[in-house]
Length: 164
Length: 100
Image 1: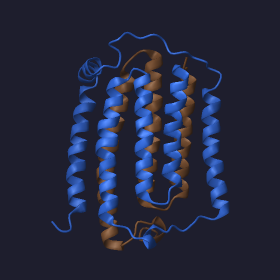
Image 2 (image 1 turned 45 degrees about the vertical axis):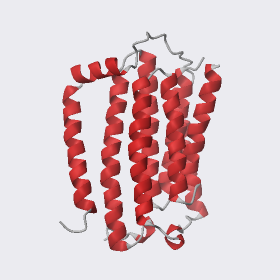
Image 3 (image 1 turned 180 degrees about the vertical axis):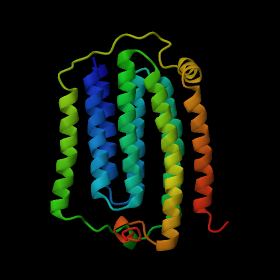
């Protein structure tokens, strides 16, 4: 049963990821990526990473993808601008070969370890335990991260503003 | 029962799809989406290893990855808007001002 769910949601994530690179229109790519993120959030929930599943849907599909779709709509690209220069067949072959090579190398590293997931208690992956670890062990990176986000906000405003 | 191997294979497949998109596409918005795919593939591996070890450190790392991805998207899309305003295109083949 669990394996069937894994194949369903993993297939959704893979199909979404393929859609991102195959659709010509960026809006279709963006919606395809949203489907991929939903599949991955379901996989996180299957691994009892409830906090990460919620964050994935709230921050990724909720905030980041809305930003993407908003920018695509704002640019208002016409058909001429969406036309891409198609790479040569040799370039396609090289790209597919190298990415399949990466996949093969990773698969060689990962295969042969039929490691089953251990049992964990009910508190694993809840917001309370994850937050407690974050503010006990990782409080300094967390504070640095808030500075980074502030810098990103200011940088975004400065870059997107026509004139200061 | 789903093993660690299944999740790692899925993560590797998502990573190579994102890499392929980064190499063959020319639209800068789709390139950004491919980068998000790469980050998500790494996140899936983080969570799977974290679940396998029974600790939560991978979750915190994944949380940091998501926050950095949000910052990257905000700055990157602002740059896309600035480029489109100045050059009138989002195709990387037309952007040659840094070619020298």
